[in-house]
Image 1 (spheres, helix red, strand yellow):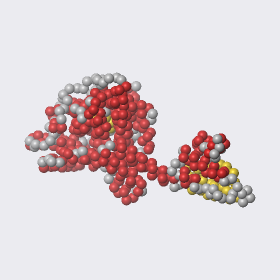
Image 2 (cartoon, one colour; image 1 turned 90 degrees about the vertical axis):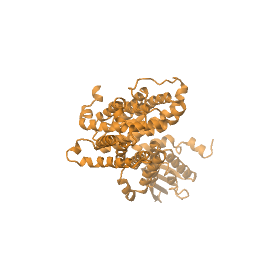
Image 3 (cartoon, rainbow, N blue to C red; image 1 turned 180 degrees about the horizontal axis):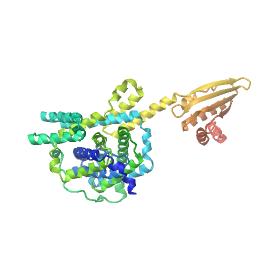
Length: 498
């Protein structure tokens, strides 16, 4: 059992890189966790406790090593109204129920729905996140002194130049170096700029295990159910998308169903320790990977370091200038954005570009990642259905000796091509017999079966003997189950009988 969760290569295959990257992530998590707590309308410690707890738990039970999960903005937006109307305790109860939903969805194979997410939607999702990450830094760059801009540029300079320093550049992750250098500069020079301490009060105690103080009745379930279900869907969607992106970045595979189940377990733990619901964070995950993190140890230590920093080293953390963290997040947004997709606007099909751009626009406009992805998936499905519907054609043959007209149908018959299928036939022709050959056709849904029924019945109304040949097993099954053209009692109803 222990070996199931503690595979040596996943935990100790990259110790130095995981430790250093975890330091960077832990520092970068603090202002984001506080900011997301503010968005949700709760005390900063709720987001910080959640980030610590979720990161530690998911490192053990998750399916994607090196991915960072914590309190997120996407989840915070969903819970705003619940906190405003019913308070923190109901949020904690909703967080636990969110975890239960996610575990249930994992057992139903929620991860397989990722197959519906096309490459265009994935690129749109990544680009939208990059834009949102950059936009989230703008408040720290407006109405500020010139010192902030200079510090931010200096931070970016360190991040991009430090790796090229011989020997030393490969020893430490450049984002960590930028944070340390800018903090020292601001402290020794006494520059008056916004710091992490200005974001909110950091907790000074360890989290305690407490069940939410809410009535255990149907009324409570009625209140938290819609929020929990929405949180579960948003959390899984963002987590599985982020896992797929990290799979590509690290050229490794991950267990998506295990990740979905792990997210549920982590959220249950978070709710019991006074934290809000969370999910994977693409920004922090990219920071982790770019800083050298590859194993579960990086995620585990990010959570541990976060707790140590905010509880025991809060005085040091509070003096870190926000400009340093802004520089790190700008680097993340730049490296996250798929720049080749801009070139693809000239070379890729129009439908692909529309799907990608729609995903970006909806996500950025609503700040709702789930809504953006669902929009992209819907458009991609519609374009695909339209494209496939054009891949249907037919050939006709007439045998004078038997007075038989044969229709050889080739292609896919479904809701978007059913009308086209029905219109293939000449219902007024003089042939006595009609053969419909569907050897190279496939009937996918009820709309296709209905079109076949309608065509056969109309041909028979015109006095023609109709036979269907060449049905494959799948088509035959759906036609036999839902078709009526060979069921006299059903035909009689359609033809005007009893």
